Image (cartoon, rainbow, N blue to C red; front, side, top):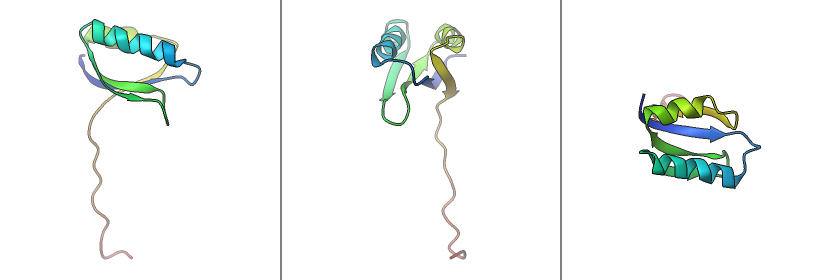
Length: 80
C-alpha cells in the first residue's frame, strides 16, 4: 500500500547504501522527505506500493513503519 513510511536500516548499513535506496525512491515515483543519521539510520518517504513491497524483504533494512503524528495528552495538573 503506498503512503508515507519511516525506513530504518540496520546498523551495518553504510551511508552510501542508504543514499542508494533514497535515490531509488526518488527516481521510482516516491519521495524522500526527511533523512535520519544520528539516532537511527534511515529516512521518511512517500513510497509506492512496489517500493514498499521490495524494501520489506530486504536484509539491510531493519524495519519499516507508517509515518504518522503521535500526540500525548498534557500532564495532569492535579498530579504533582
